[in-house]
Image (tube, rainbow, N blue to C red):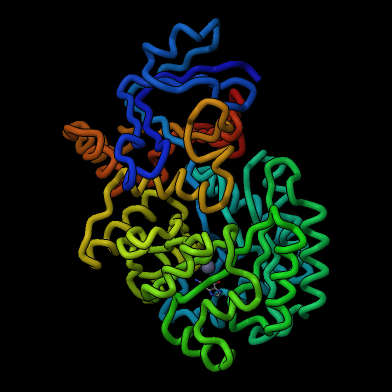
Amino acid sequence: MTRQAFRGALFHCLDDPAIAPEAAVYHDDGGLIVDGGHVEASGPWAEIAPALKGARVITLPDTLIVPGFVDAHVHYPQVDAIGGYGEHLLDWLKDYAFPAEIAFENDPGHARATADFFLDELLRNGTTSALVFATSHADSVDALFEAALARQMRLIAGKVLMDRNAPESLQDTAEGGYAQSRALIEKWQGKGRLGYAVTPRFAPTSTEAQLTLAGRLLAEFPHTLLHTHLCENTDEIAWVGELFPEARDYLDVYERAGLVGQRSVFAHGVHLDDGLRARLVRAGSAIAHCPTSNLFLGSGLFDLQAAQQAGVTLALGSDIGAGTSFCAFATMSEAYKVAQLRGHPLHPFTAFYLATLGGARALHIDAHAGNLAPGKEADFCLLDLAATPLLARRLGRAKTVQERLFALMILGDDRAVARTYVAGRLAHDRNAPRGKLPGS
Ligand code: GUN
Ligand code: ZN
């Protein structure tokens, strides 16, 4: 792979700007040198230019270089369930999500085609890493990991564990789900840039026996993550109370099974109180906030400020297919609006942090991804700041970086993602004919 340099505006976060404002770094005339799939240097162009040593230089007017986005909660089989009309969570699962997942039964061709579509859609939107639900079928995980390996993506996924309260063809058993997960971990964990997440769907669809075995997997394979849902919807929470009368609350169901730790990522957490937030902080667990999903299903308004103030590790997720967009700008924009309804603004630096380094931290991949610091893997995108007439006009009038980024996250969409690079290789080019990547 050739050594390349990119010259344009550059933005990334070296830490959480809500805690350390100087950690949000912007260079109007910036640059990035990529060598062997890694970032060799990034910074003001004048500072990195002396180190070019014959690198191929690509000069990018009207372009912002940013780290690839991290989607901290998404269901790949649900691309065909997006836009399911008229239901809240539990009926939506029954009417839309489960049928889309049943389509994976005994159909590896469907799994392969959906995995390819899903990953290409992530890349088209500038998302280079994700934490992904497959279905309860082991071959749905194989299909996704094979497709991610071919694209060299840093991706974490797992087989759904679900041994009750679901259609027969989606159910496994506690022991069967354990054995299949074990085999998948042994096959995929650490292969290329892939990681495995033990993935019980949510408390209502697992017996206590299954959750306990999920906890055993985490103890046996300490590099895996735990990925599930928590406190998304009030009917769901009441149902958990009925199904687990011995538990003091929803989180306690997971705590008793050994599922609440430093490597646990819980989607949603819409209905948390101070006590639950404090327990998540003590455990070092993360919440993936999924605003387009929470609005679409009418689940509620996540209290981002309370979670931040409590010190919860936070990330953003699309939650396709209850979520409505693959695009990180849409997720950031809806997160802003949800926060507005909660009475506080979400600063654009924090929004970009959550969609990049924050997500990488939640997924424990921040040693490799999340920003463009030297030594990191070169996952990044080139954003076209003149992608639409409105974007060009509005950004042309923005006076500060913060105003620019904010207008971008409110007005931007996939048209602004001109190119996406994965480990230094061109993985999406907006202007290439479909299926062709010149210069890769
Ligand atoms: N809770 C359990 N399963 C799901 C799912 O597929 N989507 C969402 N949004 N919530 C869930
Ligand atoms: Zn989900």
